[in-house]
Each structure stands twice: as structure tokens, then as C-alpha cells.
Length: 300
Figure (tube, rainbow, N blue to C red):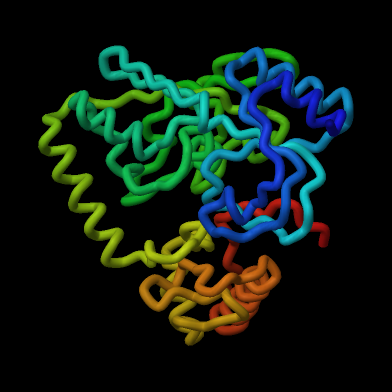
């Protein structure tokens, strides 16, 4: 047996033969040497320390939304918490969730408890950890509005960080500046409301998403951040790129801020279309569109 594989099996369930195309919502990305699912905090911390000691690259991965991976092989370890780190606890109006918990599932659980505040996240295909990392949001609400504390492992310690100290801003947080920090969980303050009212709002927003977003194709969600007082989709539409294709990647005809993987797009196809949009928008409007998604395993 591969010696590294044998060692990694001490820290959780290990899979080989996987690719980022299988583990991301965009369905794009190259092969991965090892994917590890730790069972608990001890295995996770031990795995992180092992990788650091042995100088093995590692990447935390939730549901793989908001992520554009290259087609290159990733010679390292992808750590996923969604299989075993998905506990959710309710205490009054507080919800405490492990980072691997599905934010959609958490929003449904909160609704059933008669707790409001997570409705905006009921269509976000990610985990609690990923949502905190990105300060994910929709419908003029975001994680910063409800997160009061984040449980983080860094510098050999697991500590609670006050939400005010998390550097939350539009689609960003302090955690993006510290890729070695690991989000273990988060505490969120919700508000009591009738479950039927919460469910009605979630159903309404689900219908709006289905009508306005290309959910039938793989994507990473919104590609570009909205510039101040502007909508990225309108700028992209304004350069005539609705439906524009590069290889198998296409600007969605339904929503211009979604670039879909319409036909087995390569990472290079997708990135070229992103850069073409940035260039044309800047040329026409003098605005530089910044991407919302994270790029990973690129060697440019």
C-alpha cells in the first residue's frame, strides 16, 4: 500500500481517484491525490499537524461552490468536513453549527424551530464554514448579519472569535487573509417567528431563484462581485456577452452573472471567458469587475 495513504487512514476516511470536477458545483477541475474525511476534532487537528510536519499541501473544502479549480493534478490532501462535521444545536434563539453542516439544511431546521434569519441562505449550495469564509449572502442579507461567534483552529489552538472581529465585508472575511485558519463552527443569533411565515418566504425565494438562475447547469454561483451602485449582470449584458461561449463555458442567457459549465468546459475555457468579460467591461465602462469565486491550484 502507498505509505502516505496508509498514514492518512489514521486521520479519517480516505478516498483516492477523485477530482475537483466531482467535488465542486462547477464540475470543473483536475485530479486530487487524496481526499480525507476526519471523523472528529482530534483526527482533524492531528491531520493538519501531520500535513504541516511532512510539508504536504492541504486544502479545506466544503461543498465546493464559489470555487474554480485548474485542470492540473493537485498533489496534496483535500480535507472535507461535510461527512462528519454537520452537527447543529439550538439554544433559545441561538443556533450553533459545525462547519460541515449544509447551510440549506440548517435553514430548514431553523424554520421548523420557528427561528428566522437564515431564509436568505436557503438556496446557497454550501456549508456553514464556507458561508462564513465568504460572508455569503443573498436578498440584501448575509452571514455577518447573524454570526455572533466563529469557532476557529489556528496556531495550535481552537478558539471562539467574536463576530465583530471577523472582518466581515461584502463577500469577504478575515479568514480569506488567513488560509491556514480552519473554521470549525459558528454561532448565529436568530429571531422567533411563525414557522409558516418563514416557510412561505423560503418557498417564494426558491421560486424566484428557479425563474432567474440557471440551476439546471453546473456553476459556481455569481462569478463577479457587484461594483458599488452597479449590478455586475447589467454590465456584462451591456457588453453583449449574454450567451457568449468560450469552449464549453457560457455566460448564462438567464442570468449574466452566472457562467455555466454547459458542455464539459475546461478550467482554461472558463477562466478565459472570465478574463474576456473583465477586459470588455473595463474597456466600455471603466470598471474592473472583481471575481467573487476563489481560484485554486493555478500556477500562473
